[in-house]
Image (cartoon, rainbow, N blue to C red; front, side):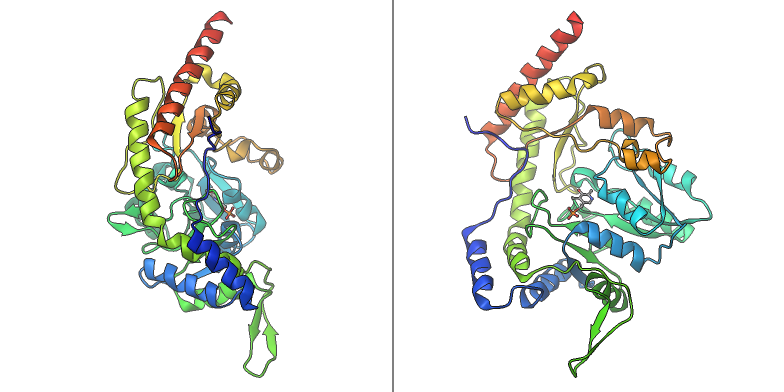
Length: 377
Ligand SMILES: *Cc1c(COP(=O)(O)O)cnc(C)c1O
């Protein structure tokens, strides 16, 4: 049987041909394809300005700068995310303040956000883990009430909705990722949705050396920008992927439904069964707490059965860098419990229903074998 990865990008022949056209065109770096992709993304975002960069990490860091977050400021976020979410806060000299997750949704607990607000709090970075959106009504009511900026880490939730509106078309600053594991890819890349042309112009400076070009061929540099522009090669991939984003989401939803029916009898905590908002970026289960210490063994058993499963994510505050920053003593019992038990199962649009059956039966056997080992111990 073929090895089943936990995700796999799906690039069609039309997109491969479009990339070849860019390679033959003589213009490889940021150019017409990037502008075309920005326009297409802006259309989906209800006409709001959208700019591309070489990663969502760069977009999140620039978003903090656009939001005016300064060294010494505090930014409230979740520890149950890819480290990029908090790394960007350190990168701008601000302090991440981690609050716990709601164990049912695995998302930042907005009640705890309110409790964590101090005089130094400038912004909140919520994360739509697995593509399941944080409650935007409560989030923006809270942010509005306390005068905080919101930088949505929507790296995983492109094409997801809130109250019938696509993410990006509502809210403050919204960052999407086009990493190959995400629901659409540009190889590597990301974009930021902003509120005004003024913010977009600042973002353009940050992504390319702080330079503004003049019509006479000269330029000025008035901001310490970086080097994070996207290539037209990457944008051509993104244009092909964007056309298929909705169709891919439909297929992910069908596969997720199939998981719910096949996993119902197993001793697992399943994700929220949301078929209106989530884009089903990942299908994540929690294994029983008494088997958490054996998760590595479970991953090995699944691998032997030809199936890749993943851990998304170890809690950020427990990693060495965050320990060195004195952030590891945050009281985050739900985050730590979920991080210890979470397991990402394979989910990508090219999967067959029979692949889900195979994951479910292998997982059932692996859990039984772990349970037996645990009772012997
Ligand atoms: C992937 C991801 C990022 C970073 O995206 P890149 O494009 O790889 O920089 C940030 N946050 C979350 C939650 C992610 O899943």
